[in-house]
Structures are given as C-alpha cells and as structure tokens.
Image 1: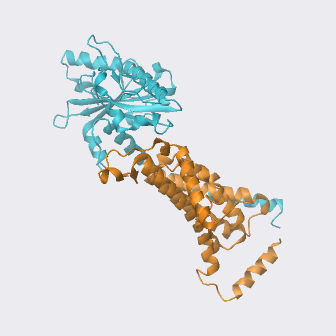
Image 2: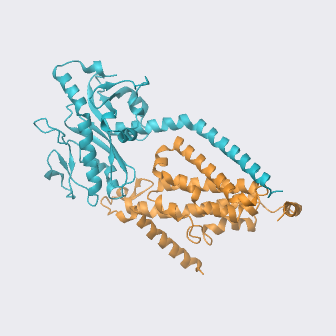
Image 3: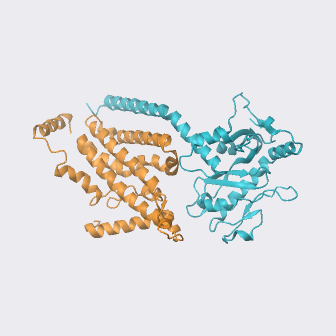
Amino acid sequence: MSTETIEKKDTQVEKKPSEPLLSKRRRKFIADPLSDDNPITVQVLGICSALAVTTQMKPTFVMAVAVLAVIVFSNLIISAMRNLIPSRIRIIVQLAVVASLVILVDQVLRAYLYDVSKMLSVFVGLIITNCIIMGRLEAFAMGNKPYDSVLDGLGSGFGYAWIILAVAFFRELLGSGAVFGYEVFAAIGWEDFPTNGLMVTPVGAFMVLGLIVWAQRAKTGYVEK
Amino acid sequence: MRQSNAYVIGFAAILTVVLGGLLALAATGLRDKQAAAERLDTRTKILSAVMEIEEGAPIDAIWEERIRSLVVDFEGNVVTALENGEQLVAEKLDIGKEFDKAPEDRLFPVYKFMNEENPEKVDAYIIPMYGNGLWDNIWAFVALEPDLVTVRGVRFDHQAETPGLGARITDAEVQARFEGKKIYNDLGELVSIEMVKGETGDPSIYDDYHVDGLSGATLTAKGVNAMLEKYFAYYEPYFKTIKTADDSEVEEAAESI
C-alpha cells in the first residue's frame, strides 16, 4: 500500500456527487453498534469497566460521557492523520493519542467533578485499555475518512453508554433503591424496600449484563459461531 | 518513504512533543482549579463530622468562620512550622503520608469547631485518623465534644472495602452508632470504642464503649477499632494539655491560631 494509490482513491471519491451527511451507509455506522454489533453485548469488549463502575447511575453516566468523548476524538485524530502514520508504529501512535485524551479527561474531571472522579478512581485511567477504543481505531479510523470515523465513534460510544447505563439502572434500583441517587421506593411510600446486596457487588453486574445479552440475542437472533 | 527509519523516528518525536506539550498545558491550566476542588472536598468531609452539610452549602465561608486548625506533635506540643521553616497548614497535611512514618515522627492536625455566638469557645474537636481496613486503607474524621470524652460524630471513608460489607462504614446509619459513645471511662482511662463482632441491630444492649458490628465485615470493623484506639492514644498528650488548661482556667485562646 503505497501513498500514491491511497491519494488517488481519495481524489476519485471526491469527484463523485457528495454523499448526504447522513446517508444510509453512514446511518449504519451509528445504528449498528447500538444493537446488532454492540461493543459490549455482541463483541464482548469493555466488560471490565461495565462491571466496575455501574453500581450507581451518576458515576456511570460520567464514565459513559468520558468514553464517548475519548472514542470520538481519538477516531477523529487517528483518521485525520491515517495517511501519515507509519504502519510499523501505528499501535503505539494510537495508544499515545488515546492515553493523552484519557489523561485530559481525567484532569478535567478532577478539576470540575472531583467527587465523581474519586468514585471512578482508576477506571478513568483504564479507559486507555478499553478494547472498544483501540478496536475502533485499528478496524475503522485507520482506513476511513474523519467524518465517517466520528460517526463510527459516536455509534460505538453510544452502544457502550446505553448498555452500562442500563446495567447501572437495575443495579442502583435493586441494590440501593434509588435512581441517580433519588430514593425511588421511599418516594412512592415503600420505605422498607428490601435492597439486594448482591446487586452492589460485581456479581450483580454480571447477572444483569447476562440478562441483557440474553434478551438482546433472543431479539436479534445473533448466535456466536 | 513512510516506512523509513528516519520517518518513523521523526514522526514519533513530533507526536511525543505535541502530545506532551498539550498535557503539560492542561495540567498547568487546571492545577488551581483541582487544588480548590480537593480543598473543598476535605473541608466538606471535616465539617460533615459536626454538622449536616446540604448540597451547595457555602463550605469555604463556614470553614473560615467556624474552624480554627492547628497541628500537634506526638508529645502534644503545638507545631507551627516545619524544620525547614515552612509554615504548617493543618488541612494541607496528608494524613496518609503521615501514617507511613513512625508514630513518634508524625504530625497530627486538630480542627477546632468554634461556637457560632462566641468564637472563642470550642464546640467540638475534630481529629483525622488513618488505618488499615481489610483490603486497603481506611480513614476517618472523629468529632469530640469539648469534654474530650464524648463522641459527637464520625465520618469514615475507605479505599477499597467490599461494597455492601466493609464499605458500609460510610453509611450514615453505621456512623450514627458512634454518636454519644465515650472514649474515657470514669477513672479517666482511655478505653476507646469497640465495634463488636456480629450485628444485632439493637443499639440498647451496648454500653458507652461498644457499638453494633458489621455482619460479614468483622475484619473491617477490627481495622476501625485499631484505628480509633491508636489515634485516640496519639492525641492523648494534646488532650491532656487542653484539660490542664481548662482546669486552671487559663484562657486557651493563647494556643489557638
């Protein structure tokens, strides 16, 4: 793969009538990872953080936003310089970009959301090793244009976000009787709602996640080969 | 061209400089904001040992008005500056780092919660503590009434205790068990407070020196007991200086900063 052929291809694409901003092909970048190709439930990536940070909705939400930001911007940056990156050190380059973005997110959280940043503790730093991000960079951003890569990042980011938020919703509701810290059961007059301690532990996350995977695969008919 | 060693090295070098510069910029730009957030967090925790903190309360204003802090050494003497002449600020002391030193070398911060009407009168003494839980460190802020015998309130926190078991030391209900308990017996001997093994849910069966335990988290409870006992002992020399001062009715304003 020499530089010349890639450049030629790029100019050819540009000559065609420009594709609509959200063409059918591009909508698939966002829609696929939400369900049919979900990074957590289908590709089974990023499980570690999905289990660790999902005891409550608030830190989970911040984590979801953090991962979304990192995945979108790293996709954009890597895609923008994909023709400059020497293929021999591409993984290190990807890692450097992801790590820098994650540290930025961590610094911002520490300055503006100190309590949440303490709750997430090491898991913000561990976004660096989240396989979803490196996976998208290697599989998509290295070979596609920046705009498409951003859409792809948004798709995977939201696919990750809705799953961990769903897990956190059930864990906080059943484990602490609350949603976003708001005591739901106390509010509707069920003061002595028996909270389930299992839901607070990672075991609860495994069970909720397993049920979501089950429900989703029953619906989409996906079977692992 | 893109595969030549020179290109690879050059690319890596430029990338490193750009990313490094960016991060350095961010770290410097956010440093003040981070320090402020951290200070606010510490102050909130210390104050919450003596009062209910509502969301959005003016923590810094309350702190300036009500808290007088000082640092004492192992012998109970007030220390105002380090050996290198640096001024000591109680809230900037890292209790975790002090915990790593030998007890004789540690510095111990004291936060005096002053009376709202009479700013010369102490309403409570708040002392920070640090110890080992089951998996990692635990720490606490313990508020004592001016008699230095009765516990007014405690706030526990932890690094990595098991959620639902040891991590329950941060529950308001568990912390409330310590309120009104005593650390000295009638003879004036230090007895500290012990969290028992097992959980009955009935606070009435315990005397002034015992509290209900944590079912399934006996080792965390043991860590709490050890931490309380050790730190009450560490602060005892300082408590004695206050008591002597009170007895001779010396205005203790002299030693407050």
